[in-house]
Every structure is written in C-alpha cells, then in structure tokens.
Length: 341
Ligand code: ADP
Image (cartoon, rainbow, N blue to C red):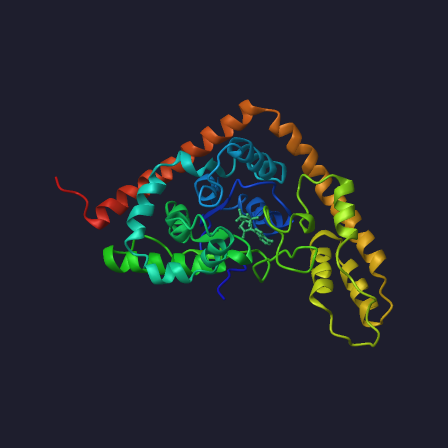
C-alpha cells in the first residue's frame, strides 16, 4: 500500500479531494478526509470540491440537492476548511471536468470498471438504476483529481481501490500521449488510511447507510449519547489475553480518534485485566464525542444562515479551480493531438 506519511517532495505539491452532497457529514468524513484537508491547506495548493455530479449516480432526485450542497460547504468550513487558503468549489461549476472525463473514458476498460467493489455494491443496492455513470464513477473521479494535476488525495480507506484505478488510467494516458499527469496517491497524515467503523459493529459510518450507528456532525448531544450507549458490547472478557471482538475493537478505534491520548490505552489495559466496564467506556466515549461535535454543529448553523457568503465561497472557489483546469486542458488537447490549424 502506497501512502505518503509526509509530503517531502515539493513545497507546493497539489492536493485534491471531494465529498458528495448526499446527506449529513459524519465522523468518517471528518477523520477520513476533512481533518487532512485542514492540515494540508496550510502548506499545499489545495482543491476541495462538493462532488455534486457524483451524487447524481445514486441520488437522481435533485429536490434536496441545493440544501445538501450548502450543508457540505458549511460543515467543511465549520470543521476548519478555509476557503481563503484552499479552492473550495462545486464540481458542476467546472465544465472542463466533463471534457477530461470523456477523454479518460477511452483509456478505461469495461472489464476493470465492472470489477470495481463500489460498483458491484451500488449495483446490488439499486438494481433498477445500474446506470453508466455508476460504472464510470472511478473515471470521473480521476478526472476531478488530475484536472489539477494533483498528486495527493486525502481520502478514507474506502477510496483506496479508486486511487489505484486512477493511477492505471493516468499511466495509460501518459503512455499513449506523453507525460501529462503525475500519478495520484491516497493520503493520510497518519501511517494508514482511516476507516471509521459504525457503532453497530458492521461496516463503516456512512451518510446514507447505518444511520443509527453513525455519528453525524449535526447530531444533538442527546442523539450522540443515545447512539453510543446503544453500541453493541457483551459481558466482557473472562480470561486474560482474550481476543477482542471486532465490535469492541471498533469502540477503541473511535475512542482513539476523539478522546485525549492515553484514554483508550487505559481501557485496553482494563480489557486485558478482565476488569473493563463497557458502560463506563461508552459514557466516556459519548462525552468525548459530544465535546468534539458540539462546537462544529453550532458553527454550521451560523454559516448555513448566510447564503450570500456561501455563494461567494462557491464563486471564488470556482474561479481558482477554473484557472487550473483551463491550463491542464490546454496541455491535454495539445498532447492528444486535437489541434488542426
Ligand atoms: P459517504 O460514503 O459517507 O457517502 P463520500 O463517498 O462522500 O462519503 O466520501 C467523502 C470522503 O469521506 C471520502 O474521502 C471517503 O473516503 C471518506 N469517508 C466516508 N466514510 C468514511 C468512513 N467511515 N471512514 C473513513 N473515511 C470515510
């Protein structure tokens, strides 16, 4: 697995990532993606977008789209994304993306697209709408990234396969038309990509699945406490050295993310000594989640109320993203040979 633990190569490496406006953001989005955005914007040339076109593959009904786009903007900004430092824009405002997507479709093969895990999952979930956009999702995602010739892509673990595909498309394009694009890599500041598990011991936190086991940045203190206290546990280990079940391991993973250093190690020592009280552990986890989410939730409400500000953010972001996109597309058309006079 190739993850860059430190960005050593260039002072101004280019960074790109996006989040779909398909619902409320959650701790998975925060720790998998946004936390890295906030650090990376300090040192790198960053492009972050609301992936509204991607959402059409699974959410064709656009009644909620505007509210969801505003929410993703506000939740990112409330979490620390600074639109003055990074280009923060809407995917559909950059038409060059669609052009690059078309060219990249010629270097993406049906067989590999059909084998993609997320495609197979989504096709299972929506058998009546297995559209071509769903199939070519990794191609559009590659276009989003390389439109800015980005090298680093802060994402969660679920995106690892898509980044591998992006490198394949880039290498094929470069082989055919010349070295236009750098290979993009999934990025996280810690040693590994993050997967924030859901509270019920199955799968990951998600905007649209596992909702009662997902902590959203918009959840009230009470909702957070209720969800955490309902998390699956058992009677606890009976013999020292017992293997930790996955649903318990997940609670430790979550604790390591939101609690002060040392807290999860203390509970782990209790687990190993067979003295752990899961009720106490969940109370501590809930309190730390409330402390973490509360201030973000309050800022979101204030940002959402200011539509003029959100419009300015989108316009300013699109301007910056367009400048970079235009330059890339000039090089791309030239490299492909689409110049006849
Ligand atoms: P969702 O799966 O909730 O709809 P998106 O597909 O919009 O989220 O993903 C936005 C970003 O959040 C991506 O970088 C993705 O890897 C990350 N992400 C989503 N869920 C998780 C999770 N449970 N753990 C870690 N990262 C996640």
